[in-house]
Amino acid sequence: MKNIVILGSTGSIGASTLDIVSRFPDQFSIVGLTAGQNDVKLEEQIRTFKPQVVALSSQTAADALRVRLNGHPVEVLDGEEGLCAVARHTECDLVISAIVGGAGLTPTMAAIRAGHKVALANKEPMVMAGHLMQEEAHKQGTRIFPIDSEHSAVFQSLEGHRREDVRRIVLTASGGPFWDWPLDKIKNVTIEQALKHPNWEMGAKITIDSATLMNKGLEVIEARWLFDIPPAQINIVIHRESIIHSLVEYRDGSVMAQLGLPDMRTPISYALNYPNRVPLDPPLLDLGTIGQLNFAPPDFEKFPCAQLAYDALAEGGGLPATLNAANEVAVQAFLEKTISFLDIPKIIEETMTAYTPRELRSVEDALEADRWAREKASMLRNVAVK
Ligand SMILES: NC(=O)c1ccc[n+]([C@@H]2O[C@H](COP(=O)([O-])OP(=O)(O)OC[C@H]3O[C@@H](n4cnc5c(N)ncnc54)[C@H](OP(=O)(O)O)[C@@H]3O)[C@@H](O)[C@H]2O)c1
Image (cartoon, rainbow, N blue to C red):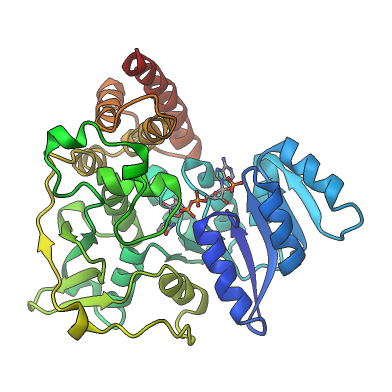
């Protein structure tokens, strides 16, 4: 029996993880769950999965939940320290990191510092402080497993091979809903259009990131630290069907890829069960019916966000945290209908330009860059609104 903590259980990844857990009740037990403010969904999960402890980042939501759970044995914590306490749960075998955004950095680091294995969906902390997370994991003698479908594909394609034989990693990207739209049409896209991902059902933030191609940029940085590979050896290819989840090319010309129908339960299940596989019984991948798979090079001029991520990675220090925070502010503003789709890369680029480079020696440095960039990007957003 594996004891599982899920950080961000009320989200899309959290729900998919609980779906797998519910199919294998003899193999998994939920010991801790966390959410931001959705106390109603968390309550349903508590009644179904019976964790020992939960936390909400919102104190108001936690108070409301405590009233409704009166008499129930679960412990309800709140605030960032509450999330960290759940992440450190002493009887935990694996922490699923599935909070959205930089808010996941401190709780995920708490899990690593406690020596827990972490299955990582929450890519933003890796972008902000990937080398520090890996350093801490090594220090604690633990590991970070990928959940992101591309990184799970790379992880699986690396299995059984020597790292020095790797020539490059190729991350596939669907290209999002606007891939083949002309720029003057992209200028006026609506939130509803941007939230319609061609292949995946995901939370709002990552869906917008996919439409701007920032998601791929964040994934390049994530791959840099997950696989300890130089940025020049990480490439992106547009693959509209999201069937090939990513590839590893070796120096003898062999290319290993992992394929599957787009369903996040497959990579989540691999992280939960590694190195074993369990029967999820998805529909067969019928390549004969699919007929053809399409590829194209990425267009960084039309979608500059991925290039901004490469730039941030090349500069290093606090710049990736700055990129990430500015993106979070800009995406939120777009979701609130206060800026246009094309304002997103502008706000990120201007925030990065205004940043004075600083080294990243600690998580606190990353959080400081994050705070600075959120303030700067919020000012730029207000200008864009006018
Ligand atoms: N969805 C996918 O298919 C997918 C695939 C690959 C990678 N990822 C990555 O996985 C992460 C989660 O994505 P998602 O699509 O599952 O997001 P989501 O559906 O928006 O869920 C986010 C989760 O984080 C919680 N949360 C939000 N803000 C928080 C805060 N300030 N403090 C604590 N918890 C907070 C939410 O709680 P409330 O419900 O209370 O707001 C929810 O449980 C992201 O980093 C994303 O890039 C997702």
